[in-house]
Image (cartoon, rainbow over all chains, first blue to last red; front, side, top):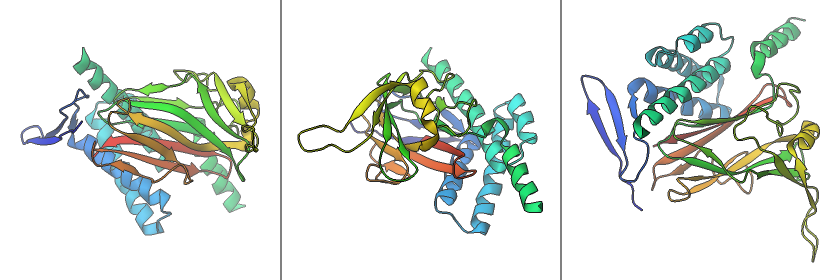
Length: 113
Length: 181
């Protein structure tokens, strides 16, 4: 079955909608969400490749920033508070990943009701 | 002394996360179905273990699946009480097959497998996307069974990423993420 993906941008709300022709979830992911996913994958790639210290530091800084922005954007107050006391980038990212999953799950169930 | 202090601080910084853990996140728009979680020894091939019951773990779009057990941070969390669904049984393979005979294995309960978990580490998971209508594969540690990391599918526009954070050689956070591309 061929799937088609269409990206739409709404300038006023800056949301990106990914649509599939098959019966899948239709997440209206925000730029904050997409930035977090992109940074997360780059950070994981740098770790896998045992990148140079500078590259690791750059991806680490980026993911930490995007994780913090994401948490604020999705209104994850407790996670945002927890993130402030995170003692490492890894801990911060794990907090953000869990909170992001909770948000997406909420969005998924809202659209499947 | 300073190095030791720094190391201890690093360990403490992970708090409740200081253990062998497997976190799987589905940020994609598809349903991920895990058909098998596989572990391996630190060196060599045997014994290795594969999840048996339940036969599938479904992770809906946005969902996550975590295996962890803080009661012993050095054991692979075969017995993961907070996981839903809970993996109740594992196949433990102890040697290769010999001519005319299959590989010797036993079906063991997760609580039993957990007692043997110090020597076991995450290897890979087998998965499908939307019940194989959108492909699937294996993702995890580099091996004969894991063809790529990240594993990308450009026909159905998804990607699976895996990374292992080695806090020490025996304290490892394993993370898998599924996303749309």
